[in-house]
Image (cartoon, rainbow, N blue to C red; front, side, top):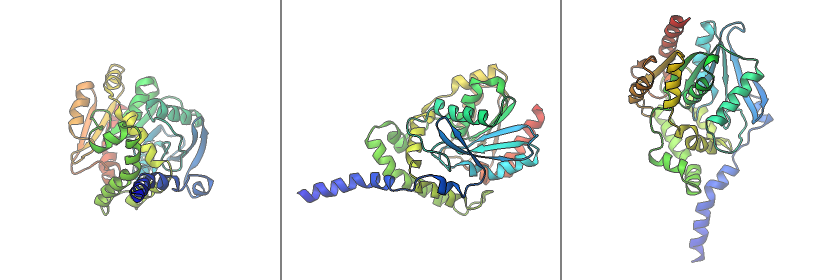
Length: 307
């Protein structure tokens, strides 16, 4: 009978041991990183600038699992348009620190405000957010609409309920949810990455880079903290406020996206009838790197119209 308890204990302990023995982000790993680092109030943030220093500022906010390298193609394209483009790693991802705790809007807005202050970026910002990053960008714009020149949202979270299924259970359930997240989420993520491997992309080796995030301690807990935090929030009030403040909004969707359904476009237009929306044919959730040229064309047309 004791063997049953030992086996059960081993099963329970395995995900916790794996997480505890993953690599830890530090100076050695950061020595290979492009860009620079800022010591902010919640920890170290990795960031990188693209384009002419005297150009209008664009700040790009990435999504739930893929750090700032997701912007390589988009940032270079925006730089060619003359923009000065800032990309950065959200806490828990890439080369940034891994602070613990709930990752709600206040958590992410503190990082973004800290970084903007550190870099001397004030007003007249064009914000580009992808997936969860679109929710972060939306909440920033709603709190400080006069600081935002334009808001551009790619496959935006905040309109659809993402708390369904096993991910929702893991995000909202104490103890067992944490254990399942540590044990099951890497399997689910890698399954999705295998399905995308070999697809066209503007980011060389992106699926391998995404997979490598799972090697770092704190990444999976950060994903869970975001699912329980900002990704559990409805952004109707924020989008209605932006409509009232006349902040120009562009939202781009992929018609093959299984994460952010195309029905989100209708929800957004109900909340903000002035929001301009575009749909890219054949694009899934990875549209910033799978359909980079199409996204840049939509952005270029939008910003030229509003300049």
